[in-house]
Amino acid sequence: MKRLFQKFTIGVVLHVVYAALVELYRLDSRARKEMDALPEGMSYSITTGHKAPVLNVQWQQGKLSSLVQLAEPVCSLRIKSLAHSFRLFTGQMGLAQAYACHAFSMRGEIADVMKLARLVNLVEGYLFPPVITRRILVEIPPLQVSSLRVYAAILCGFLSGRYKSL
Amino acid sequence: MNAYFEFHNSVKLLCGELSLERIAIELEHLGGRAPMLLSDAVLEKIGTLGIVRQAMEAEGCRAACTYTDIPVDSSLRVVNEIAALYRRSGCDSIVAVGGGSVIDTAKGVRLVLSQDTDDILAIGGVENLSWNRHVPFVVVPTTAGTGSECTGVAVIRNEANGVKMEFLSHYVQPEVAVIDPRMTAGLPPKATAGTGMDALCHAVEACTCLQANPLSQAYGTAAIRMIAEHLELATKDGSNRDARFAMALASTMAGIAFSNSMVGAVHAIGHALGGVCKVPHAVAMTILLPHVMRFNLEKCRDSYAALLPYLVGMEQAMVTPAEQRAQASIDAVAALARRLKSICGLPLTLQEVGVSREDFEHVAQVAVNDGALIVNPRAADEQQIIGILNAAF
Image (tube, rainbow over all chains, first blue to last red):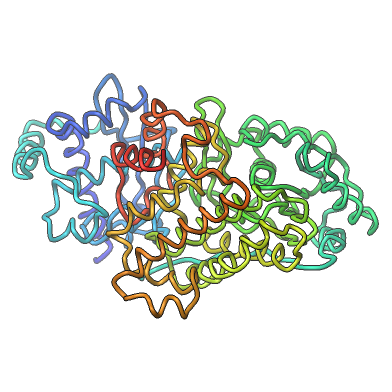
């Protein structure tokens, strides 16, 4: 039951993270700069555990898409257990802490993970309240728009079906 | 302290007199009878490689193939070429004799061979490999600095984009490392000082980065103490065998420390300086260490203060007011570098090594994508890295 709950929560958070990335491309100049610098076709796959939710994203023609399946991601992150994923995606652990605790393995170039890490840090800075970000981020990024605006944009996006996986 | 940490060191260390003479039997125990000998042209020319070869041959172990064209800044192409040569020559094991570039190249070759691939780029990543084909692997470091003989990382330049890539896996560690003071006896003063500062940098970053843990700190602080006590002596008097041996051990211990807790911004920026401006790794570490420590100070007061007894001795540390100890540690590192400069002319600024301010932006762009930055105690963006580079100019 606990595992089911964790899988469900992680699945929801992964959707929200992807949605936040899409919205931050519009709302935050740092996110836009990071994504614009990605090479065409750059793809990431994040596996959150055994038979657990997966997030596949690909940067194509100036747009980040979520994909149901990604045959050969350029960079794949494999979080070593569902328990670690749950901590990571519920604000109990930051990406730097996860790395320091050997919580994930990675295939691809480390430079690509660093790009993703900066984007995820931005997402966390917007989505989590300061009481959490102070604990999980090495440095809290200054927000260019209010978190409320990002949440509102995400909500609108979900209602309009903008984040459907391809 | 992190709620979880890992510590791995599976390298058998052969330390001290007549260590080289034991390579043959160790290889035999590992199943290696026809080793590939890897080194560089300088070590071949000055006879260092010959000492190792002689010690091996005297015990009946003859190299099936020798490759001595490994450049100072090796590359993925060189790794793939050597792996192909290994296969063509019927070798069954690797003996690497050299500094960081030779050993990291050998680690890359070993990865390619053990993972049954032709291209090291295909297996890049972090902790992503499984144990596959066994390739017996012995290393003989000829500098006292990189600690590469005990680390789970190989740093190799990607010629295509000039970026130094890190391959992190415990499977890159050799089975045996040979720490023989004969190997560093002929090291010139400037190289002795620079590589020693590299070891100090490994130890300081290992003790203070986000991945630091009690075991890596035990190795790191022990290394710092030995470096503080012996580096100047080894630089001034290269024939002092005790100082040479102490520095070799300190380098190995610092390597074990950072292999189990990573490094930080000094290495991230240093790798970028190496990739973009061809600054030798040890020189970059020497120049950057005090500046990055100043940058990190606000996040590292306690951890830097804890290093002071190892840097200046317990007595001097105890008479330093507690609130000044962190700054005193940085001052001690900077002062050591200045003394080394006066002994052997070790460069202390980026200007001295020909870096131009126009390169800073490119260096910063590469540095922010270096994996070492993720565990630096303070986040650093491109502008902050340019600030550090300006301070080091």
